[in-house]
Length: 328
Picture 1 (cartoon, one colour):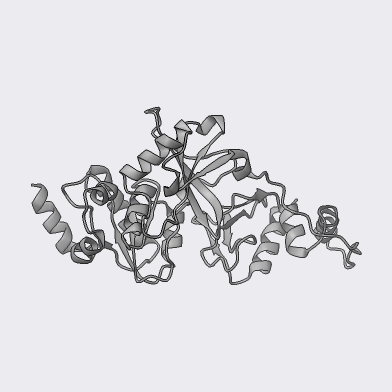
Picture 2 (spheres, helix red, strand yellow):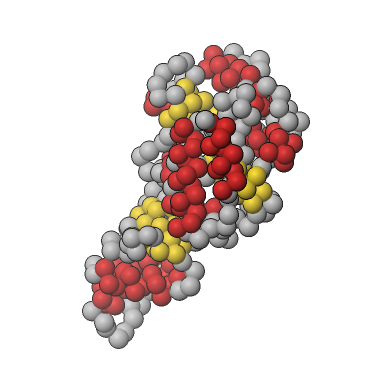
């Protein structure tokens, strides 16, 4: 299949509703599998036609995508593409049939998850006991709403790990697995068809006036439980793709990375990408200096909503000078 045909078809099909990657090879468009996907989670290689939805993990080839967009079968799509590549003037008669589902496996089902809520304190399952204790001691249950669910997995790769889900519309689109018995790595990200961590943000309120960007999901959850809109970049090295998504947020972006060398490098990279992407000015608010991160501050009883309100400041030359003086 000629790359020129793929490129022309995609640009015509999505018209003004797309972005190009920095290398102009991938076209970034709204996902076909999510309602009102203004964040554009579907990436398509315009040379090969291979595509992946970074929200649902679904992926496939160009013929599958063509069939889905045109509402025809896979075989009909192959025939259509063949004739159009040879510039034939007639169309192929389509048989009445149901459009195919993209070929992907149900990754969530394969994890064999068991849910954990605050009500599971009296379980007899030792793994669930460990997970529940970890969550309770770190204040990761919302005791007022009782609406947070975590999981453990019977999958061998994730056994004896707490599954921290990334959910939207009751669908798990990503997760992080935290060791419960000291095994390394402490945090394990999924692979095998799941999206890359650098393409993921922890779910947040897209309509809120402010958004704190922290390093890991436990920090984001700690802030959210205390009423602070927060997400995480899966570490302190924000990616170009994550900045593209955050650029669409209409409110104030507050960097809340840890106040250490790695966190400072992460802030510098974030500011560089912000300028590259012509993003609005940033604000900054590190976790309390007495603590290592937002979760520890949450455990120690800090009022994080008040703290963020009082300590947030513009990320500008005044901040950089003040910050330099405090480190001398």
